Image (cartoon, rainbow, N blue to C red; front, side):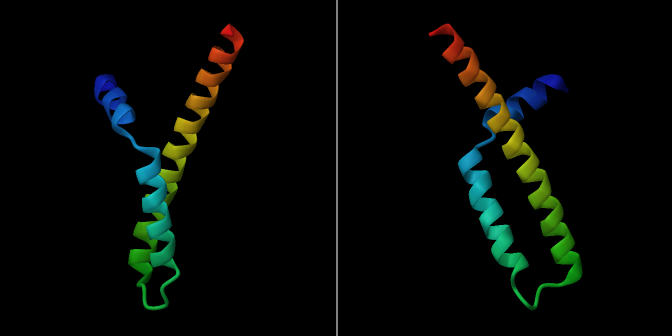
Length: 70
């Protein structure tokens, strides 16, 4: 299971996630969206945002390590 999570993290693309978040935001702004669809999109968006944040924190730590080695 941990191996699967590492592979999923490795395959995670921040740019694609940000594009998807933008698409979700646009759909949520539509006037005719149902409550159920809104909730589903909101949940997906919050999960994606958390993954993006985690990835960026990881990159920041890597940069700090690299900067400390220089």
